[in-house]
Every structure is written in structure tokens, then in C-alpha cells.
Image (cartoon, rainbow, N blue to C red; front, side, top):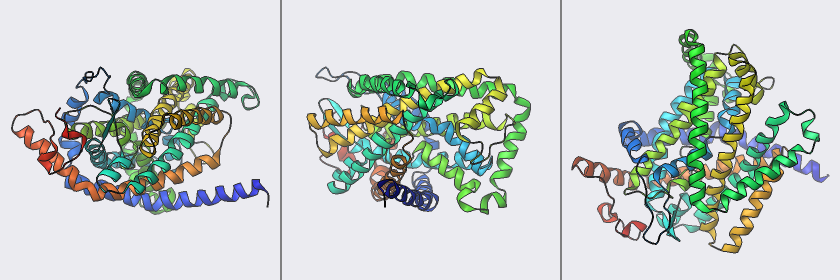
Amino acid sequence: MSVKEILKKFNDVLGSINDVMYTYILIILLVGVGIYFTVRTKGVQFRLLKDGIKSMLEKSGGGKDGTKKVSSFQALMISTASRVGTGNIAGIATAIAAGGPGAVFWMWVTALIGGASAFIESTLAQLYKTKKDGQFRGGPSYYMEKALGKRWLGVLFSVLLIICFAYGFNGLQSYNMSSALEYYIENYGNSIWPMVVGLVLAAATAFVIWGGVHRIGFISSVVVPVMALAYILMGFVTMILHVTELPAMFAMILKEAFNVKAIMGGLAGSAVVVGIKRGLFSNEAGMGSAPNASASADVDHPVKQGLVQVISVFIDTILICSSTAIMLLVSGVEGQSGVLDGIPFVQKAISANVGNWGIHFITFSIFAFAFSSLIGNYYYAESNIVFIKDNKVLMQVFRVTCIVAIFLGAQADFSLVWNLADVTMGLMAIVNIVVIFLLGNVAIKVLKDYETQKKQGKNPVFHEKNVGLTGTVWTEEK
């Protein structure tokens, strides 16, 4: 058997594992934990949303040693940068083509439920973060080691995340950016342009990541709001142009969401499963990725950043994914799985809505969304490299390999690498879900401390002794 045949069989096995993992195991775990924490926190993602917005706007000054701190807003933008990628465009189109309009409703439900899981994991990340060279780092690996005393589990999680985000997903984002130019350049795949795009992306990413976490936070806080607002505005313009069709569109979403045939027929492709899957893996709530960014923020109380991360989930799914869904559903263009889905479906729909210039807007959006994901994904991986071994030489080697992955990703569709990334993401999500379920009571105690101080008319400031903890970074008085 040739190497090519072996790799093909391995790729087929990975695909089968993905189908089972994402269609059954992860959906049950993520939705179940989301509902559990929604009940335990009494709907914290709704009750304290106003507090999250207030915390998001709080500024962070420089440290005593002159180092620049990452603000709550910058940490939000780093996590949003990773969440918001080409999946918010192509992924939603694929979901509607496969599961029908009803998938959109279940996508919304998933975001609303998942907000509670996002709150718990990000609060834990803040609680068990560490300080190095004036900057905070943390995430699931850190609370697995500090709270559970299981460093080996943290290392395993870190390895899975690095494979998934630094190489798999960043290669995918690079490929999507490059392939978006096929519309403009004849015989694009066989030209020199994919290499040129790869070089430009690699150079731009290198400029950002060698600038450290502050530069990543600064770039994200500029690029993400601009691109998100522009895309949401396009959705709003589309709604205005088709305002008379909106009641029928929302009625269709609800009807298809609860259509028995749509729910039960072909479970893996049903509106419920497709919608939940798309929502979960777009907003990443409970999957253990966003806490890596959450831990970097300099805040007075862990709950503040936990609440801010709820906003990131809502931005991703309720605003941006919904904008894509609206542009597709009012266009009159009907998607079909395997025939017209992904980017071609979006391009045809947007062209029907606003004319050919809309295709250029989608191309711009793909580049903006994907580039923000490149630097957001990199930051997640960097934090986990530091967790495994804090070594400057190792970090430089890692950065070079990340740049090479981006360069190569722009030139080839490495389906094997992406299937491997999907498997590693699924495994890391399973590990994180189990851990946050075990540590949930700690996060809920921290939430009660926050609410107690609020009732006393105070601006909540965290002290570990208030919840019976010792030895965290919060030992230092703020």
C-alpha cells in the first residue's frame, strides 16, 4: 500500500471519528453543560449582561513596572477574533444548505445556552491565571494544573489545542483567504498568486505575533470592531431592502425549526443537529479556547471578564452569524448541500440582494475575518506553549512553524490536516467540558462574592480569601 493510500485511509478514519464525535457526543455534552450552568447561575448570561457591557468598557492602565496591560475590551477582541472567522460566512451557508432555515433557530438557542458555559470557563481562567513578565496568561491548562493538581492533563489539553489552532485552523483560514481570489484571477490555483498571498499573510502575521500580546490585543481591538460592524451593517441594509419579507422569513425559520420531518429525518443532517453544531463550533462556548484570551485581561474581579466573554458569544452568533443567515434567506437563492453551499452560496445570495459589488464585500469580509482569526488562534497556542515549557528558543521555533503553516495553507487544501484539527478540537472540548463541570462550584462561589459586593453598593474587587482559596495570583492586592 502506497503512502498516498495510507494517508487517504487515515483521512477517512478521521472523518468517521468527526461524524460520531460532533453529531452525538459533543452536542450532548456541550448542550447539557450549558443548560446545567444556566440553571445553576440563574441565567447569569441574561441577568448580568448589563454588567458585562460596563466591565467591557473599563480601561486598564500600565503596570507598576511600566508594562502595558491588556484591557478587558482587548481580551474580548482577541477571543472574538478567533471565534469570528470564515465559518461565520461559509459555515452558516453550509448549515442552511444542509439543515434548512430551521437550523438558524437552533443556532440562536445554542448561543443563549452556551453563554453560561462561556461565563464559567472564562471566570475560572481569570481565577487561576498566572503572571509572567508583567503579563497575565491562563486558560484550561492552567486551571487543570492549579485547581485539579493534574499537570499531565493540562499538557495534554495544550498539545491538542496547539495542533488544532496553530496548524490546522490557521492553515484553513489561510486557504480560505487565498481561495477567495479565485473569482478574480483566471486559473488562480495554477498561478504564482497563491504563493504571493501566502508570503503576504505570513509576513503580516509575523509582524503582529512578534510584537507580543499587547500588539495582538491592539490589532484585534481595531480590526475586529471595524469588520464586525461593517458586516452587521450589511445585514442591516439587507433587512431594510427586504423589510416586507422579514415576517415571512422569521415565520419560515420557526416553522422549519419545529418541523417533525426536519428534526427527525436523517439525524446528522437535521435542522436541530446542524443548527446546534454550527452554533457550538462558531461561538466555541465551553470548548476551552476563549479562556486563553480571557485570562490575559487585567480586571478587578474574575466575574467581570467572565461576563465580558458572554458578550463575545452573542456577538459571534446572535449578530454576525445572524447577519449571514438573513442575507441568505431573503435573497431568494436556495442552497443545496454539496451543490450550492459555502462561499459560492453566499456570493450568489449577496449578488441577488445588492448586486455584484456585494461579492467584493464578501471577499473583503473573508480576508478581515480570517486574518483576525489567524492572530487570535496564534495567541491561544502561544499561551499553551508557555504552559508546557517557558523557553525563549522554543517560542521562536514555534513562531516560525506557525508562519510556515500559514504560508503553506494559502497554497493547498490540506483536508487531512483539517480533519486532524477537528478531531483534536473535539477531544480538547471533551476534556474541558468535564473539567469545568468539576470546577463549576468554585466559579459559582466567585459569582456569589461578586453579587454580594454589588448588593453592598461596592465596585466588586476580588480577594481569594472571600471564597476560601489560597495561592492564586489574586493573593496580590489590586
